[in-house]
Length: 529
Image (tube, rainbow, N blue to C red; front, top):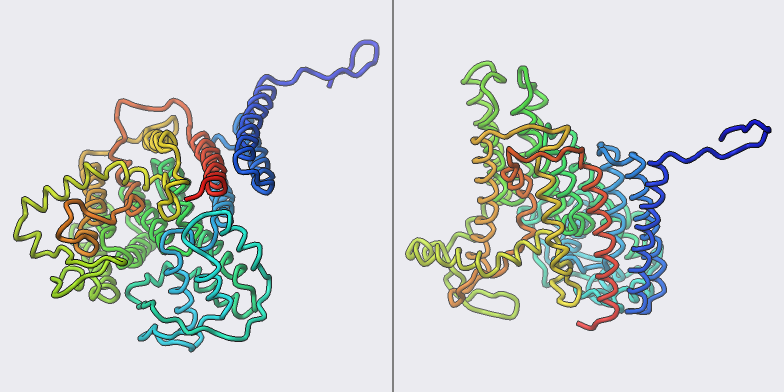
């Protein structure tokens, strides 16, 4: 504001960057609002219209903050806010039990909570008690499908506090300590314990579990971001993928597995690049993280191979490095033996009878089949990659959320945009010009291949009948814990993005997620399955 010669006040011209931020924010809001009106015309849901218009305002605010320079550089605090907002939206956008295997994970968490309260046994999960309204919420009022009725049921049965006094004894589900990845279930078990003590209703307990599981993932992802010495954009973009958020904002133990895998890789990369003597804190954090991750799913244990790249100079002598490596792998193997050995052994053993897959029956492939016909097995794996490779890519990004509901799949160009974002995240920037050594890229490539072929092998042995010519049951989400390693391989030495792209990538991914969710719910309301 200026004072003219005649004493009148005059508004000074706005700075060009201010005008630019207002213009782009307004355009973003108008585009998103038009899309919201289109969705309303398709499904006629006023609630969805209000929510999508609020989302349109949020999109406009994100664009405004970016062009004002407030979120163009990512930081741990900003990443926390991006993830917290995204996880809250995903937690409430999807009805209960609509995330893959969520009924199993919910009841497994309930069983563990009962065990802690002395109402069930860690040795036997048969007949553990569940409050009547919690059982009804999980098995009667909810379904795998995302439809208008699934949201309507939440509104119809929602109660803040529970008045139910009866319980239901669960049958037909079998759980074990070794099979449920207890470390990654701590948040959901805690939510159920708190909810039962406070006599919360079934839906408040359920959503509390989703929110606490989200908080656990956010803590691990932000810790990984802080520890990662380079390629921080990879952590940001993987954490904001629709499939990652879908799992994080649910009862799935994959949420903790993805977070632990990101953190372990970040800890190892920091130890590889740091100078000076390896501290006791670094050693303990790496060993503990590896011991927690390894028994969750064996196929992600190869991330520990990055430990071989830690320079010998950080240990003082070759002997100390060997001791560290032995300690690391012994801890990982011991945790696997303690919690998962029986499951791995049963998967690797030959079937002596009929195997069942849902309502189907037959005989699964076994290791003896693979060893007896190695060429045929190799061709089976290669054929599966050629036939289902696009499905693996789509389900890794989140192109098919829920239980592969055909009417809510994302348009394929969304998947390609997410792929471009990930490729950009892997490249050098103005503040990250680090080039990976050939040895580093070889290890990263091996880690990703172990994840890919390990998941295929587990489904070959435990989900594919000998009469089938393509491996069944493999999903792209199984690759998310090792995706960060795979993306590091794709950093191309001659290519560098001249600006700090972290904020831009986070903003674009978040905007896409909002548009995707709006379209998904519109399709669920408007188009029958």
